[in-house]
Each structure stands twice: as structure tokens, then as C-alpha cells.
Image (cartoon, rainbow, N blue to C red; front, top):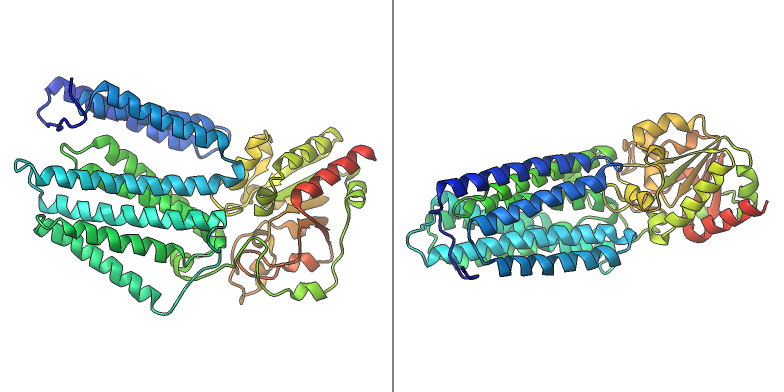
Length: 480
């Protein structure tokens, strides 16, 4: 029985190679269908399972059919990995899902770096497997992208978790330093192709690119974290794809899956940037954002007249209304108010009110953050409207209720050319007959921009923590 130390040999029977290729093809098809199903909240769970089955098939085809290690090692590794994944899935709060995604991205990049290191060591001790120029270059690039992904994802996790301040950190010469680190790492990758006997070159690339990942991500503010999470996801895919090419023989499943993740991540990044009407360069180097979810911008609105409402008054306003649109934001996630929002949804539906949820593409801290939270409490998928679907509905809504959202509903994005969010497509909540903003204070959001919606003539502020406010409102509605 082969052991863990068994060296993979390319001299496998033709029929075994054919079975492996068929398995990889089926796995690739499952990956594609899985990603397609992930595009809709209704089919996302099934898509995750579909892609998981594809990955399981690819693992079996790689490790068992190719006789890379014993069945005992394969099963043991799968049990340990599955146990870790199950514990994380069970214990993680849905509000902490962005942090978990950031960690997964980072581990994906680190895995690619470890595979490259092990392959380099294997080829260094086997003269029958020389490292060609293209393989050496690919090794260097894989380490470069993988290390940037790992350390960048760790910084993203720290910002999302609150361990690192959410504000963008920039300093003089930062861009030049980043360019130098990238240039040296890229040149070192080329050098590995020319002279692959110098093993320390990979360590230089790993060290520089690890620092580069930190300096790139720490310069991005909390408002732009959804874009960065999507971009890091793409990086992890590209690192995996590059790693697939340097294996002997090249691993088709790793190449295909990495390419799919890399491409889908780039597409999602583009969608996020478009949703904010900003270029990727502006997101990476613009330094937009503030410290935390309450913002740190000026409090000019504190001295301006605002109208507020309490739970009992709001309950009377909701009595008999025909149409309500709820716009969730990160404030709802922080307060873990999704369960109270579900209760409000059922109370209003039972009273004959038509209730919809307006979902902005960059609401929250990762793509689809609000969809995940609302799916957790079984809000019907047909009540979740995206930006294009929802905006026409506001003009016929008696009440638009904003729960912890800020920049994505700021009317200044439509007309204030001096604003950093100018031109960003927003949810037109101000077009509703009455706007209720549930927020702890009048402070600015992540972009550090004053929200003129707070002082609009048709706006009422419902101050307080989102969870407590929604619970109080539900109680008032049932008692009236």
C-alpha cells in the first residue's frame, strides 16, 4: 500500500488516465453548474452542494486514482477537514459570514503557496523532473498571488472583525513601495525560470508579497470591503490555477476550478465597482471610508432640525398601509436584528400589507450579505428586490423603512458632485411617501459622508439599536 511519502509518477496506465480525465470533466461541469446556482438566493444552497460534490470527485480522482497516497491518509484528511468545516459552519454567526469568507480566501491562497513549495522541493531532488522556464515563472507568480491573498485576507478579516481599525491607512510613498515590492517579486519569478537552483528566491517572493498583501488591504476603508472580499476571492482562484500548471502532470481540475473562481471573482468585483460607480483603481487607492459602522464624519446634522418617531407612533402609522419597502444595511447585521425583522414582516403581511425588501449590491460587508441574513430567517425570495427592481416601487410605497443602511440611500449621490459617492446608484427611498430611518445616531456612514436623507421633509428618524427598535415596534403593533 503506498504511503504518504510515495512520489507521484506520471507513468500511469492509459485507461486510468482516461478515467481521471473523465472525473475531472464531470467535476468541472459540476463547478460551473454550482457557480451558476450561486447567482440566485433560491438555488444558492443547492449550488454550494453541487460544487462540493464536484470538488470531492476531483480530490478522489487526484489522490486515489493517481495513487498519490493511501486510502487511510485520504479518509483521515477528509474527516479532519470536514470536522473543522462543520464546526465553523455550526458555530459561526450569520452576521460574521464576511469574516469567514475572508478567512477562506486567505487559506486558499496559503494552500497554493504550500503546494508550490512542496513541488519545488520535490523537483529539486529529482533530476528527472527539471524545472522549465515557464514552470519556474509560474511557481513564482503562484507564490506572489498566494501570499498577497493570504496576508490581505487576514487584514480584511481583522477589519471586518474590528481587530483592526476600519479606516483606510495610507502614508507617503505607499504606492511607490507597493510598486517596488511587486516589481521585485515579479523579477524574482522570472529569475526562478532562468536559474531554478536558487531556492531562496521563492522565500524572497513570499516575504515581499506577504508585506504587499498587508499594505494593499490596509489602505482600503470599511465601505469598500465588499469589493476587496470579491477581489481576494479572485486572487485565490488565480493562485490555484497557476499552481495546477506546475504539477507533474498538470492538474486539470485545479486549473479549471481556479480559473472559474478567478473569473467569477473578477466579474463580481466589476459588478461591485459598477454598483458604486467607481473604478477598481479608486477603490484600491482612493482611501475612501471611516473607522466604523457609525462613521466619523462631521455631525453637521446634529444641529439641524430632524423629526423623530417612537415605536407606538410608528405602529399607528403602519396601521392599514398597503405597501412597505424595507431597506436593510450593515446596522441590521451588527444588531443581529434579522429575526425581529422577520417578525415584523409576518405581522405586516398578516395585516394585509405588501412588504418587500430592497437589496443594494454593496449593502453590508460582502457581496450578498443582506441576502444571506434574510435567507437565514426564511424571508421569501420573491420579496427580495435588487436595485433595478426596487427603485420603481418606491414611488408607490407609503413607507420606506431603512434599517442601518446609510451611503446606499443617500440622495447626495445623485446631485452632489463634490461627494465621494457622487454617481453611485442608490435605492431611491426618498421617493416614498414617508421614510423611516432606524439608526443609532445621525453620524455619517463608512464613506464619511453626511446623509441628507436624515433631514428630508418626508423622513422620520427612529433612533435606537435595530434589534431593540424592531422588537419594540412588533410589540406595539400586536398591542394596538
